[in-house]
Amino acid sequence: RFRQEAGQIWLGEHRMVLLHAEYLRGLSDELMATLGLGRAQGVLFRMGFASGQADAELVRSLLPGADIQTVMRLGPQIHGLEGLVVGTIERLELDVETGHYLADASWQSSWESEVQLEAFGESKAPSCFSQTGYASGYASALMGTLVIFKELACLSCGAAACRIVGRPAAEWGSDDPWVRLLEPD
Image (tube, rainbow, N blue to C red; front, side, top):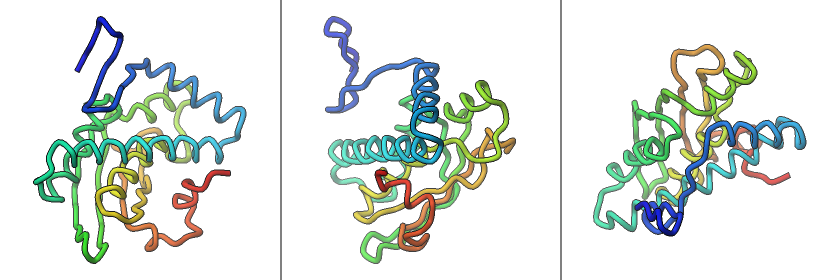
């Protein structure tokens, strides 16, 4: 909902802020310059994680009777609605009772990749940390267990599309660098 007279944008009960991608690039650049690459990646991942959790809670509240597959598949659509990326789930296996989760997805038009390419050129490492954080937070909130997505291929590294894979954190292991992004330093 747009409430122009009040200067507000709402998605469900969450107030949203429409920002220029250049603003977010500046914030990302500042984080990397002041905190260093590893710490900045963690901040961006945790920021995305919180956003994904909030959106999962919103979808659950709007569609209380929807099955888990439907609700899970709405995550990429909301992510796209927010202008962050166009996501496609290629494979999704889940069982809330047993904690089984496996997702393979691709992204087009990733704002983080586009910013990386525009500001610094092609990278040797993936750049979509807030977006993988978002996918992790969204899936974790719905599964009731910690799910971590890793970016295996990235537009900013020269790939045709970003590719992410999500599994329960326990399957990646506690020492995995993507799992450790959730640990504030």
